[in-house]
Image (cartoon, rainbow, N blue to C red):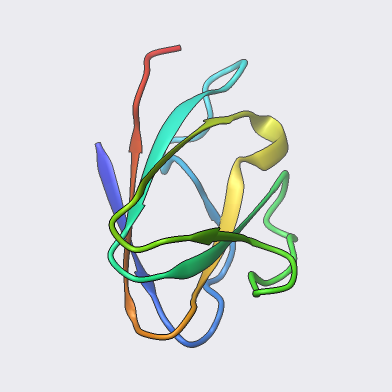
Length: 94
């Protein structure tokens, strides 16, 4: 199941990386953005907003794969220069 998130001028609200929740022990998740953006991960919905000073830079068109656990099961994202989308998909059954 793929989730598509709009990336805009303001940081998104905190959301679960996987809409159905994180499996016990975590799993690998793939991310692909169609615009340069900053993404910030955290353990709860109370994480700070994504920004250029505290978040990972995702380059447009590049696939990123991370092992996501309960310690980074929430994310927020913000664009670098132009609006776009971020696609998120579980990439393993682990």
